[in-house]
Image 1 (cartoon, helix red, strand yellow):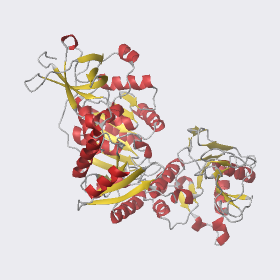
Image 2 (cartoon, one colour):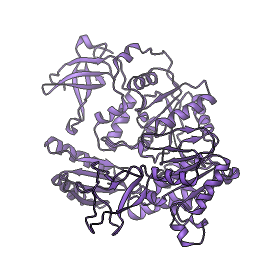
Image 3 (tube, rainbow, N blue to C red):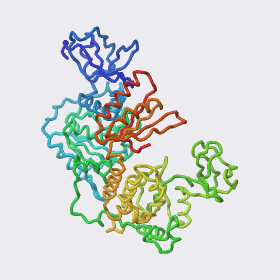
Image 4 (cartoon, rainbow, N blue to C red):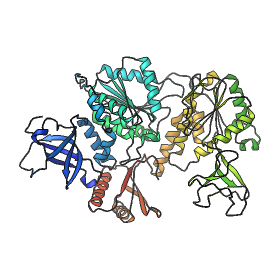
Length: 620
């Protein structure tokens, strides 16, 4: 760096909103060579030692008063790219957060030993060719081999001397995809980047991406900030997955950040999966994203046969059974051909108990939490506090007898074991999740998301207790049920090979209808229209604001003055002594800026913080 650029503009590593801006510091001569943009330094601020990122170097001008010196360069390895800084600033503004909070997701924790041993390759920067940007969404049928299509897109980007970024919701999908594309194109330079990696491995991967000629980065949520120098393609798989939504401030989600980065880098964006998300569907409706179709395929080659309670006996009692006779028949026939998968929504023996006399929910006498049993002979215990209720009695009728109202995985295994003696039963869920099983003639009982793969594909699957998934009191209940059931369909043989899936629900249910139609996006279209009719996200951008009643009331009064803004609340949380409002707006830019300025005022006045949550996975 030229010595005349002797002032460093830094962002303090501090979460206070009123300190979320750039500060100027003098660069001492002895730090001139190492204090470059992208390094982390130590500075004095209000008499305290603080860490900060160097964003830029500028000239000392007459406008500068006496500046404090940079006291130390923590690492002379510049890891913060200018484009990543710019992206993080945009994300902070979009999600009403601080730049320093976003940088913590973008830059992994430093590992000094890794830095010292890391060898950076010298390579020519990729040519920055103009790109006719596209934003597309593709829905793949359950048994469609999508990997080949994605590899071709990655190779097209490489031919244009561009890099690709592919996002998955968990590390297992990342590793599975990398294994597949490595076998198809072994010459591709691939790096995995995930917060689920060990710290040293993660930091080395980050440095390799930053300093080496990488063709593709495959990672989880935080990889959306990967330091790629010539990004040409961003692909996100199943963008509705909750893992894409950060649980830490500023509560960003990977889909929106990927779109922001695609705009910033002028690169292609592609959302793929077995169904669209409601948010992506809204983008298609708004003509921001274009829907692409898979042409010329026979449904029964990619979809299993879907059966429901309508396919059971006309006997009304048959429909009330947890496992109808038709489901038992499908399991029995499926076992003659291979493995059978049973999906149950709950772990344990029973996840809910009721008084057998008055049917009131059985609650803990200490904390009023719900009672459950972990196995057949165990006493009920509280789901919340863990206290064993060995002498429980109903507080309404004094009965000491209880009944199981919601059956768990362990109880299901017991029932299946009695009906199929000698058949191997495998479980997967909780802390004991299997990723694959050897093909055979077994019954696999798994919770949603824990279903192991069978190399030859399951011959049949039964989705038990469908009402538990469909009845979740959540904005995303229908979308989430669809996603979990579609995942099961990807593991079952197609109808042309005899694959069958039985759902313990009526065919009139919207989610079930979309599967019978072989058209998941029929449900998503319907769900998006419902959100529009009720003024909910993604039709509107929603901002949840939570804090002390005084500040929330003040914000509520401020935003009720805006004609194009809806305000729900305030809702009072007495135990936490907090309040909450939810603001909705079709054009949120001005509203987000106003919220940000109000939060900075509260921070300057040293009041308790107000938490802003933009487009949360679910409205709390």
